[in-house]
Structures are given as structure tokens and as C-alpha cells.
Length: 116
Image (cartoon, rainbow, N blue to C red):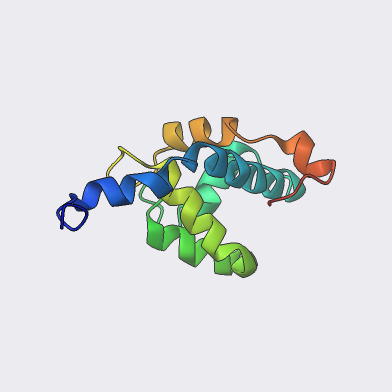
């Protein structure tokens, strides 16, 4: 019975622990995609800000992924968005975008590290 009385937050906290590694891996994918597309971080932000309001929402990320031909990576982009905008109310600002991309390691992606 004691196990059933555990607060739900404790059960949910365990999967969130590796988020740092995941966001770094996802940031690497996004940063490498921008490099491949010859886009700067700022241009990438603008490309993913589908509605042009100066913030990237989850919907912006979905719409942009499809428009940019990244539909195969839609779930990874959604996870990247979720992790990158933690504490920002679900909307990614340019500052948050830049911070998240800085976590990426483009060199490892180019050397074949890829996303595990």
C-alpha cells in the first residue's frame, strides 16, 4: 500500500534525469541541420518561428519541421523544444534557442556520432 501512496511527481521525476544528455544530443541534430542548410542560429530561429511572433511554440516547431522537410525528425524536434524551453512557459525565445543550440556538438555529428 505504501508504494501506491507515492506522489505522482516522484514516479515522473526518474525519466527526466537523462534530459541533459538528450537535449545535448537533440541540440546537436538541430545545430547540424542548420549548418547543413547554411543557416545561422538567428536564421534558424526565424525559420522555426512559423507564425513570426518572436517565439517558437510547439506548434511552430511542428509546422516548421514539415515545411523545412524535417518531418522525419518531428518527434526529436518536439522533444528538443520541450527540453529547451523548460522554465520559459512552453515558448522558446531567441535567447533560449541560442542557449540550447550551444549545448550541441556538431563535430561529433559530422564524425558519425549521430543520435543514439
